[in-house]
Image (cartoon, rainbow, N blue to C red; front, top):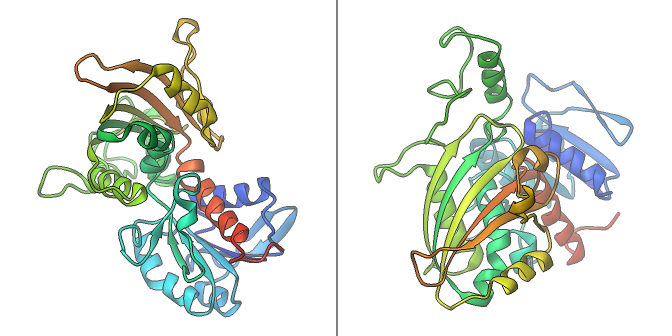
Length: 335
């Protein structure tokens, strides 16, 4: 299969290449696409060198699949052009997520919504993906009434420049003397601010979690109250999640569901200091959950802790899994 990766030199794009190789995705020809300053660069994939090309060259090559991680503006401009030549696009930006004509997919949850007519498919927000994977079996069993979530999000979610900012600060750089992508220092600091603020006082990142949850679960009745926070960590995103169910739950059944849910790993033995941590989630494709306990302040309430590598399941891995689902359904060739 001829596969284009748009944004191939970026942080998520490089992870997409890693995941394609690791999962033995049937790539016969790779078309790495990046901005004009990167055109002509060489990228190594599966032992071969491939030359970075422009978007126009990639569209002319008519790949069967294009994985996008190049920002909303690029996706708005280029995804329809790829789709027009018969390329199926899986887009990692927020551009198409809430478009009612586009599917928003976490394959383990709603992969079956994909249809042959879908040529632009949206990959959800990283924080949404990792929250919803463990929530899905719980929602089916007990019906989630309300979610209160606080996120602790890695600087990798902002990209290479954020990692460079944190490195400069750790090396003793003074504020104002090095390039910064955040409005404040991030090392030894926490910013309750991800994406831009809205008139409501919430951020766009927080509203992504609200709206995407309802769309993926196909349930507009779920209440979601998020606070998204940037922390000086590189390994992945962490989330403190509080649930209120419509029905009473059994803790043993909750644990069993976590053990049985594809893509979820239960790490919950606090007596032996076993619980999910971003340092150990780094580079892994699963969502790790632990610290399960009842919330005594509300009827049918549950608290737990959730960690995942935001560049993997939160972005690249989920995108490749969507492509695998398209193969499974016969919408992409398996060679």
